[in-house]
Image (cartoon, rainbow, N blue to C red; front, top):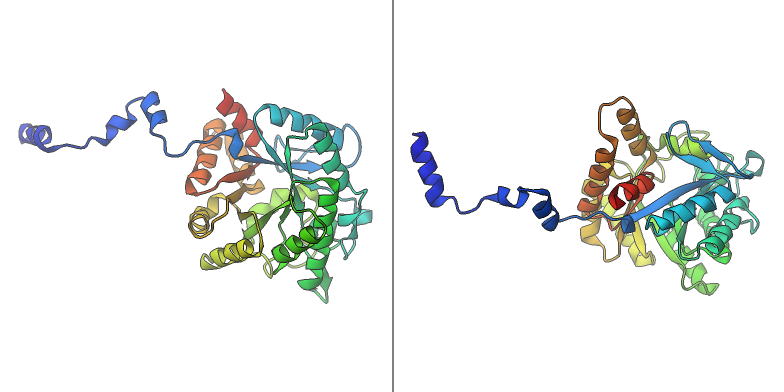
Length: 335
């Protein structure tokens, strides 16, 4: 019987798919998804002071740095072939309130950081987080009234913040707040103030996720009451994500984002199929921390896990990936 089966294969098996998996050379030649340092956006956490480099306990190997050390890091990233950074700042507690006014202080930490980085590495494409949670005494992404995060007044604050970043020299603002109508309002304000070259990367499908914990530790921005479910999306929803992305595209977003990454790869593909602008994905702090923890225990190969994770995100449809693994991944890819 076995002999008959092999004769059948010799006569009729016309497609042998394993031929294209035979060795590393052919696998590289036919790879459908290719990961490069050009795909990465590097999130950077910036703190006040000089020569500050504080490791974030829940994000091993990642740091909150002062501007001087941040500039050194940016130079190193650019030499690795990474072209973009996304800035977050840690606001002092005494500067936090319920208006977020420190967010548009022309001499604020974010504004000084933008100027310093653009002066030191003009070619680096600088993006900035636009949301009120680092500046809010309540740790929420918007202004609070009677226990509610109000939409329209928050949008007014986000507009001021975006214009302030543009005045400091930012290349692209990245509203991460999930307020309704903020992309249109920011686009209009940028146009009115003649910042016609400043882009908008909209956090369009940002889900209310448990995986944000380490990030909130990094910036001390956890909500002081309740949660963020009245403005961030329900993780049970798919169609809503497409609707949000299409709305942001229509309002003037240059790039739309899905956040988090790994638990939402189906959403990435849905959004990619729906929009006509590039799609970014944020491979977030909790995803980073899980791989770091498993690697520390010896349960996985960290380098292999990094590349497989980032490739899966790109394969799902991401044009850009904001990731804490960017520097490590670039080093691996560059050999």
